[in-house]
Image (cartoon, rainbow, N blue to C red; front, side, top):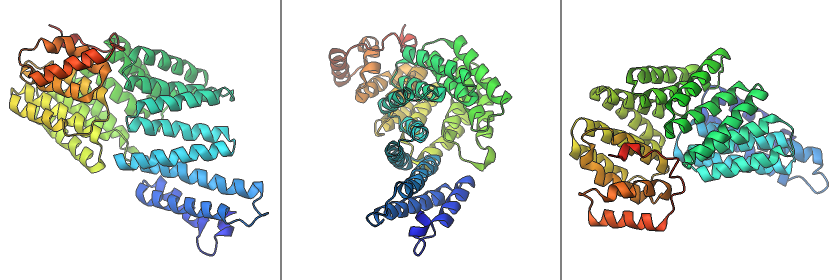
Length: 425
């Protein structure tokens, strides 16, 4: 056993137990550090086994500890909600997948891949998440468990959403829901519904999105799911309410979601997003002071966690508030700040610009939004607005040239998926 090999210099069992206790008490930083120490000592233990003493049982015992340390450390780092810890979490989980593969332990490989897919999603690495989904699907060929298929399809749908391939995402997520119901997995069903709601909204199918979000919330509450699924369903319903112009209901859903997310004294990934949703709701009601207060809090979350994507979305939402107040210069200043952010999610910037165009005074800052879209060099989004924006009289020659190049170089791969009605006359 590892504790026996290292008993003289490191209390493996004691430190591991303290790490688990710290994780359960939400002391994520301390727990992550202890799990790292346990992993390093476990690795040294297996490397230091004398020739002929590295029996399969001893090696497996050490690998068990190494795997658990990497997975738990990855979870702790993810809960700390910063970009840097998310990157480190992904690295730990990738190593956990490798160990599970060496052990030929399919259930552990599935668990590590599931967490790895979520890590890729937090980093907005949608193509990488899609590749993880494919790896899980390959694993499901060797496993009869429906869990493999459900997990793979949820990740696939979420990744396709992130890539702007919303029609494909709907198909994958509906299949995920069917698989989840077959396996009586309510938690996976609710998670799939959350991503499916987003896909429907992007396709302009508000009624379908509302039905999906409402069912997910009812299911999460009826099953008393304790893994944040109620909060997830509430945020999805808030998105639907915003799209339907029901600002008061959206704000109420956001408030309930944040309350659910804070239960158990745990930080829930998405608190900043909840604040941003509330800001959008109050902005829709022209309650600018409250919207700005919510955005200020969301920006603090973004800065404290190093979440650059959230910071970018807050700035875009702030530009909408300024535009709504008739403050074109301040709105343009917010958009200029966005240009300085290493954007991780082009689809988010497109969605926020679509929201901005609903404000009557926003036309004065459209040249800046056009430039930002081109700057992203995201062909699936840029090419959609080229025709509309090229006709805008205020476009500078550099912006016009940039958009012409985007139009020339790329194809309309997702034209029918992305909403452009807001930009049409």
